[in-house]
Amino acid sequence: MSTSPHSAADWVGRDLGSRTVQWDERDAILFALAVGARADDLDLVYERELRVLPTFGLTLGQWGPDELGSRGAFPVGTSLHGSQQLVVHDELPPAGQATLSARVDNVWDKGSAAIFDVSVSCDHFTAVWSIFAPGCGGFGGDRGPGVAVAESLSPATSVRTASNAAALYRLCGDRHAIHIDPVAARAIGQDRPILHGLATLATSAVALARHRGAHPADLASLSGRFRSVVLPGDELRIDVTDSPTDGFVVAGPQGVVIDNAVATFGR
Image 1 (cartoon, rainbow, N blue to C red):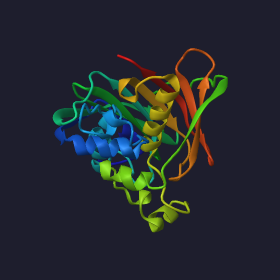
Image 2 (cartoon, one colour; image 1 turned 90 degrees about the vertical axis):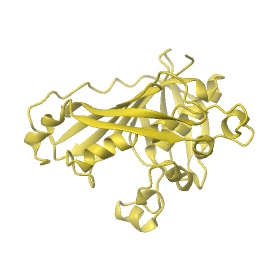
Image 3 (cartoon, rainbow, N blue to C red; image 1 turned 180 degrees about the horizontal axis):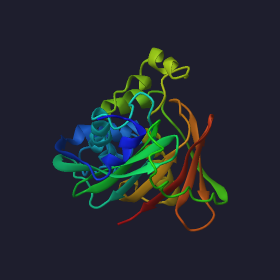
């Protein structure tokens, strides 16, 4: 399929197929460790009475946007993961399988670029990847929803990412070279491998749960827009909105890394 500006709208509503995925306790524990679980968080890192972090589901559904890219909808080499949404329907079991279905919900016309919204859903969750694709806009489509006006913020908490966070997280499914290979990282203008955006989002959700006195496995919904990179070992500052909207912003040494973010806990 061509990636010309006039073809982007043709992907709206496209079925990307279904996949049955499997996982076990080891997968869930590795993920928890990669996104900030501590050794004494026994119900996140020990098989006995293990609970699965809902953001683990995003590793199970990553094939959806990857499938769209492989079909030629957008140029994989220059497109970016713009934002992420997750709505939890039911807690994932410590081990099991699920059949996930993927489709293109929307394609928004941003002029010089397009945004492809790819949803992946199963009984346990629905997630939406928004892929920012330069060169695919200009087809006369709807620009889509605007970015929410920034609210006033108050400092909430901070968390330091582990120096091996990217090396751990890539074993959960996303093995792109920029997260492990210094040569690949330098090719995109970074001094060393960067942390996955979804790892940053999941790590922030764990820290935010602790700040709110909630259990991180009780995450009910999560969303955020990715702004800049995080390097493994960076300390992240999490500020929360002053109004009762469950909103938050994450900043690191490179500036704001996630904004327009919302996390709710309890189902």
